Amino acid sequence: MGYKTYRILPQSEDKCFSTHLARCETILENRFYKIILDSESGAVVSIYDKDLAQEIVDAAAPHGFNQLLARWPETGEEGASTVGEIREGEDGPIYASLLISARGAGCPEITQEILLYNDIKRIDFRNRILRDSTPLLELYFPFPFLVENPQFRFEAAGSVIEPLVDQLPGTNTDYYTMQHWANIYNEDMGIAFSSIQAPVVEFGGLWPGFVSMNHHCVTPPGYEHEFKKPGDFDRGYVYSYVMNNNFITNFNNVQVSDSLYCYSLTTHEGDWLAGNANRFGWSIGNPLTPVCIQGDNGGTLKTNMSFCQVDKDNVVLLTMKEAEDREGLIIRLAETQGQDSDVEVTLPFIEIRQGFQTNLVEENEATVATEKHSVVVHVKAFGITTIRIQS
Image (cartoon, rainbow, N blue to C red; front, side, top):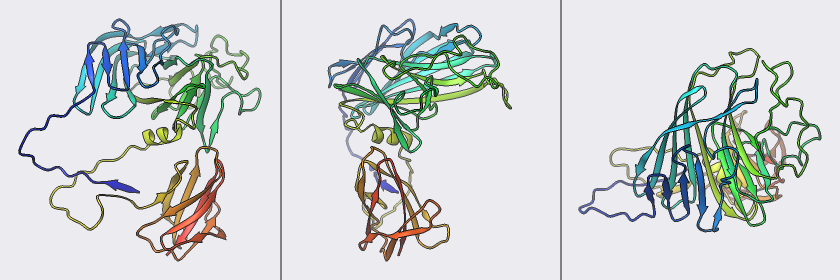
């Protein structure tokens, strides 16, 4: 619901762009992080946060950081990918990268890119795998974070969940489905983690896995293990569960494909609220869309504008659309940090005549306070509020 305009103009002189980015062989660095890769495995062996003076990779973990891991459900045997080459990728004033070529079980080609930015405190991982028809194979990307006495939070559907605590006793603790983000933190620091294509994650370790007795091909070792209890996740590990071929349902149980999995992370002081994990995850999941416009396009609008402005960082705009009965606009808001909030929504180009709070099927329930271009509504903690605007 907004834009920012950049103009490309000719210059008479070359300009030298300074950068904090540095790269050599297996090292990638900027003013926020120093990343070191293992030349033999291609795994990340160190990510040092310069601001926090903290190492965030557990080098003693059983599986390599961002190294593709395969597991066979018949035996529980595991196998990590092997590196073929580590080489330089992009090299410019905005970002730089390292490229890793590898291969692994069921994956004859693996290409991984690790990116650092000059002015953004964020690390991106782009993992592309060519998957063959090898059956009965689980694939993971491990992210063993070094966080002592870790706590976990992740965004679920319309909520933020603490694993093991905010779930019914006896329910599955082997893996969870996160929406935009997960956060691993302690009293001193935290890590915000986001995955676009692979929402299924395991916390604290690599667990046996649990699939309905009626829906798996073979029974994996440890299938009927006891689920974890509060306090059992004592390591700050995240495993991204990207493929599983042990399902026997109404589709082929092999996944021949060329697949891309993108991950982003950043580090911060304090817990998930102090680190704005929700803002980070939503920004990763909703990247800006560039549009190139040719020719002279002078106009009266400002160089940047938001057509629907929400004044609280903990509240996001889910929907802005025409009402189903065509009586005005429907605006739907969601609270993301567990805080009851009075929210002002500003529509700078719409003169508001009246506003209503509605239910989810857009039936008016109450009037709301309005000004010429704004409306104020209450949104409950982790709640969804829908309003109708008539102009």
